[in-house]
Structures are given as structure tokens and as C-alpha cells.
Length: 188
Length: 305
Image 1 (tube, rainbow over the protein chains, first blue to last red):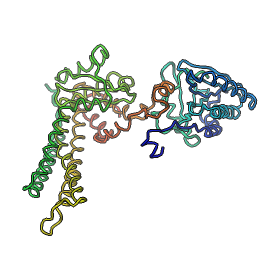
Image 2 (cartoon, helix red, strand yellow):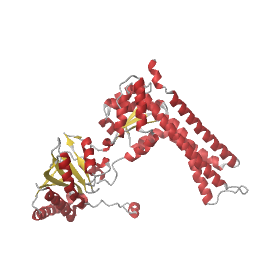
Image 3 (cartoon, each protein chain N blue to C red):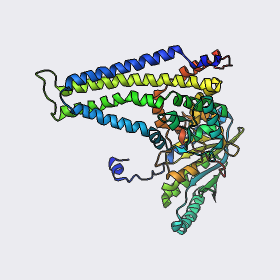
């Protein structure tokens, strides 16, 4: 943020930074070898839809977007809302590299269609532990953090911190722990 | 009663007394120099009087200021019955009037007490403290804060910091005097503004260090008090460990909930930094734990370290 922006009070929403997503391919190997966690074959892009005034335009854009993604990738992409009023674009692909590429593609298409500022997070699910692991990528901060839900409102902080130590070399991990927000009931 | 014995630590009282005495000496020396330099002019003492009024106002509004600064909301019994019960029980143990109870809406576990006298005091705990710690650990923390109230730490620290505040202000004035040529020359010696500046800075630095020492001693005293009130120092120990641990920084809240409220993190969602600064007035965790373990041993309670 420039000084003039501060003085004039016009700080912009940060544009999403999506290219760090590809760092996941090496992290995936660490997760598998050291912790026995394997990709569940699902990932998602989480974003906040436009206000109702722009709803119709947004709907059309979204349809276009899904078609564009379908043409370029073999992954299955579905759409669903949640109780927070957010939209999930869920990507399914058993090939992890493809999955990451498709999630990245969805995010960049959203940005290209003018939803860049509404992009909140990309989420990838890993199974194999007692509870599912979600690696959450915050587009605003350009960093990952682990989320391991246990039951409805609990999370496994101890294992999340262990993952931080294990993955730090391969992934840009969010260093400010107070930003490791939860994503309970993620639909993936 | 035999138990009373745990409430006193002669070494600690001695160190606290000595430090406060030295601080007093520093202030007296500061004023003697001011008098020698400016005995003939009223200006500088005008500043002292104004600062005095400010300190007076601060002293009488300290409870409201602290509540405002931390975003704490005073809660009535029906809003937080369990917390009220706990504070009431412990205040009874500590022989204090029931303080007001406040809750700070943040997920980071922490607590503070404020108010110039026991009657005007407020105990504030964060939501994180209430949600993340076990009830007996919360009791330890609340008892620690109640001991601060019983020891009148807010009043002591306000008074202790008064002259440091004056010195800091005078240092600034001295500097302005030098920059804008306001200082008078006193027959070839160093200019008055320079002496004023140097003396004020020195006073400020020394008194600041002493104040921090006093503050740390009073923390130990509050830990000891909490151990006596609850009779179970080990719970305060585990509470301190939890509060200091990084785990408690990880939020329980949902990303979507937060992002809606804060318009995508434009406003930082954490007040962690402010609390970290406050902690500099506290002794290191290991030392506090070691002393609590010692008290615990004296009480014949089980300790795991």
C-alpha cells in the first residue's frame, strides 16, 4: 500500500495470487511418505458471489466460466453454495497434478471474469489420518495453512502445528497463526 | 492460620521495597536538579502541574480507559452467570468486594484487571480464555487478577509512572527549546536546554527500567496471591503455559464468517500485538513457573514440570 493510498483512504482489496498453488505437488509427496496422507481427489475454490444487483450478469459469467474450464480440463467441476452465502466450485480429479492445475484454472478464470477480488481460498482434501486434512490456500495472503476438523467445532491444533513444521520447506505456510481460520463443513 | 505464611515472600517484598525506594530517589534527584536550574522561572513547574492534572484524570478514568482500549464489555450476571459465580467466589476468598466483570470478544486467551481501588475495579477476561482453558485454570488466572486488585497495582503503577511521564515531556520541551533557540545561556556553560534534555532523558530511562522491575515483582506477587487464593498453583501454571503457547493463536472461527465481517482482512482480526507489548512488563514464563512450582512444593501439592 502506498503512502498516498493510506492518506487518501483508498486501500484496495488485494488481487489474488494463485501461482503458488503448484507448490502442492512436492508437498503431496511429503504428506504421503512421512504421514501416510493421500489426496482425496477433491479440491475447491471458495469465493463470495456478487451482490444481487449483479446477479444475472454473474450467473451468465459463471456458466461461461464452467464451460471454458470443461473445455480445457478433464476434471469434473460442480458448483454449490453454502450457509455462509459463499460459492464452492468443486473440482474432482484422481490425478493430483491435474486436480491442482484445474483448481488453478478455475481460480484464474474467476479472476478473468472479474471475480478476482472475491476469491477467498482454494482447498484440497487429504485422507489417511484419523480426521480429514484440508490444506487451505488463502488467495489474499498467498499462503497455505492446515485445517483438521474433529467433529463439529473442534480442530486438531497439535497435528496442524506438526504439519506446519513438516511442510514449511515445501509450501509457503501462513506464519501468522491467528489467520489459520477454520472451514467447518467444507463440502469436499 | 498457617496458610497465611505462603502469602508472604520476604525476599520479594525486600526487592520490591528497595526498587520503589530507588525510584523515589531518582525522582527526588530529578526535582532537585529542576529546582536548581529553573528555581527562578515558573514555566517548568507549570508543565509539572499540567502533567499532574493529566495524571489525576488518568488515575480516575483508568478503569474506563482500559476497558475502552481493549474493547471489553462489562457483562451483568444474567449474561455470564458462571463467570460471575467464579469471580464472586474468588473475590470472597481474597476478601475483596465483588468487582465488575467484563468480557473481551477475542479468541486469544488473556485477562486483565483495572481500577484504582478495589471498589472501582473490573476484571476482564477474553472469550478465548473462557473457551480454551479448564475451569480450574480460569480460576487461577482470575485469582491472579484479583490479587492485582488487592495489591492496588493500578494505583501503584500510575503513581510510579507519573514522574517518568513528566521527564519524557520535559525532554521533548528541552529539545524544542534547543531547536528553536528558546534556551538561555548561563555564562558560557552548556546551554540550559541541553542540561534539561540530558537530565530528563536520564531520569526517564532509569525510572522506566525501575518501573518495569516493579511491575515484574508485582506479577510474581500476584502469582503467589493466586496460589494462595485457589490453593492450587498447578492450575495457574498450566493456564500460563496455555496462554503462552502458540496453539491458542489458531482461531476456532470459520474463514467465511470472518471474511464477511472484515471485508477480506482489510482490518487485522487480531489484537495479539497489543497483548505482546503488555507482556514485556511481565517476567519470563519459565521464571514464573519455577516460582509457582516452589510455592506448590511448600504447600505440599503435586507438581509436574
